[in-house]
Length: 258
Image 1: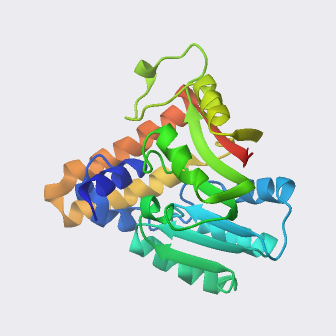
Image 2: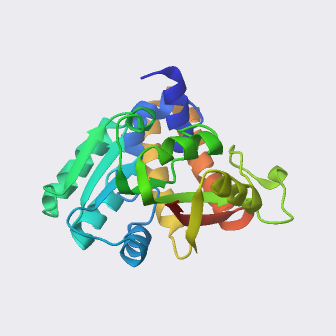
């Protein structure tokens, strides 16, 4: 894995250092849903996308496949999920078999930056909670648009700075745009905003953070020399959650390629 790719992956999972990457599957073993809300994504696709047996969905940075598998199970459409973590892809394949949708799901272990150069003509593409792994906001949109057919849809989880707030209030190291800046980017890239949903309402951050903290304590007991790394991850998780709850507006956007 390239160093730049490792750094972006670590950042997308709120890790402060790439040294943590080998331990992320252990830290996140109790969580299936990583990133987007499966319920929200299913609902948006069902509401706006004319679904048929020919419908194809791409889920980039799919994590353990929660969104992909729920879409396949609920809408009976084909889904391709891509993630860089082999342990996540293994979990996704196991879950798809358990829920009897493995015939509809294809999970690939690979870099989303490479997948955008080969995957084409999807009816819907999901990029949920993956941060800047594809680069800047403009780079991200340019890469994603290559995978969506004309008239197709792009579903993104992001967050923006509310009016009147400043970046100095942000605890987690991430460069947020304003909503106005995002809307201008969408327009410049030929994207129409179809629907916007607040994406953290009702989410139980405390439960996730407690599960991660318990696994971090277990790792500290096994690897006391890495205490700072594990404690730093727990702290980063808490900071990101505080930002999402108090300092930024977390949203799910459904956009149509014109």
